[in-house]
Image 1 (cartoon, rainbow, N blue to C red):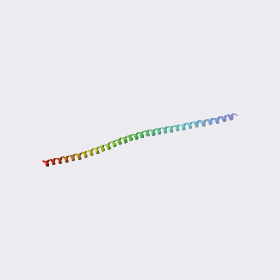
Image 2 (cartoon, rainbow, N blue to C red):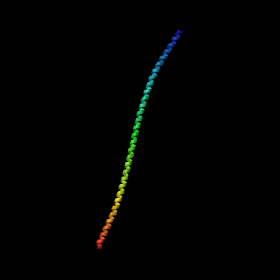
Image 3 (cartoon, rainbow, N blue to C red):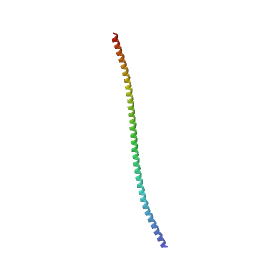
Image 4 (cartoon, rainbow, N blue to C red):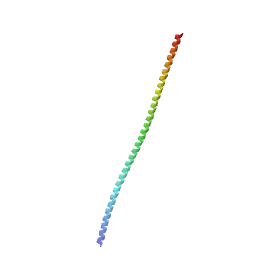
Length: 114
């Protein structure tokens, strides 16, 4: 009977020792999992930061694109305005030249008529 009790005690002690070893092993695995999780979260944070930076760059590029489009529109309007002014000057020149010719003809007629 005592032998059985001692045998049970030894078995329980061995089981307890195995459970303690398993507990240490699981604690170590848990630490490893925690480190992997923290590393993954850190990498995710870096990716989020990179995404924010890329978004800022994209917004900056879009702003620059809008600014360039606005400058291009202003340049087109300036060219159009210059063409209108040139056309106006050409028409005025033609009108003035016609008036000069008319005046010369009138002067010539008056000289011839005197």
